[in-house]
Image (cartoon, rainbow, N blue to C red; front, top):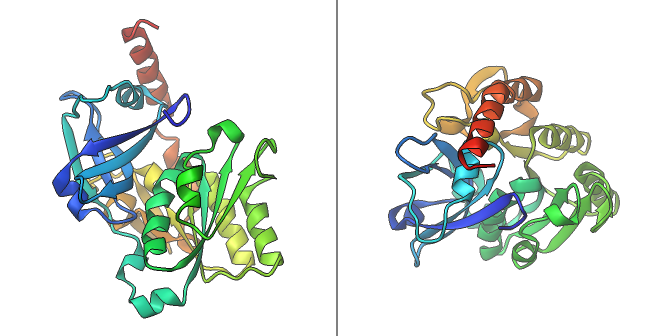
Length: 276
């Protein structure tokens, strides 16, 4: 347990681990009657045949996943799915000219980690901003410090690092003279929206991940439809990463709230079923 409500699991899935790339996700079902849950791959070890996933306990299905014990098995693990991060297709020469700034919000820090790790292994300069409500909700701090050039912590209450929003930290870093060629933001939709607005003001290209929209993960359910550059795109099969300037965040946030009532009802039934 990384926090009281966020758990990290290593899943033995050799074929999946051998094919995984940064930016991709997998789908798990806790049991044969379980909901399909898309989870971004937060790390992978090709030699050991494992992939890591981080799950935040929010509704019934995520509560069931977090309750699983070591040695148990999912009914299904499917992946890797989604389009890998675009930098995985760049030449070594092109990568060497880049300087990345990653902006991670809350549990979005987990999918940022494999991207930063991949770039670090290839000698690319990477800075990371991690934002959380308070110090107790910061995850992957030690892991991130080991694979980035500079790590900047932001908390809403000032209990760790910089007191303020990740967008304020980004502006501060640029004002101090740090230069970046590419920003990547992963986290709550509202954070990515304002990170994009800030990046635009700084004339900084930015990529965002719309993984929080996904439900089915195959493009069949249509829940992850979003307008990107005026066209309807499916986050699960065409993303989950897109140019932040092109994303209609207001539409995405409306879509994200479509199933709130059902999630609350299912979560209540789950608690009753577990005797709580």
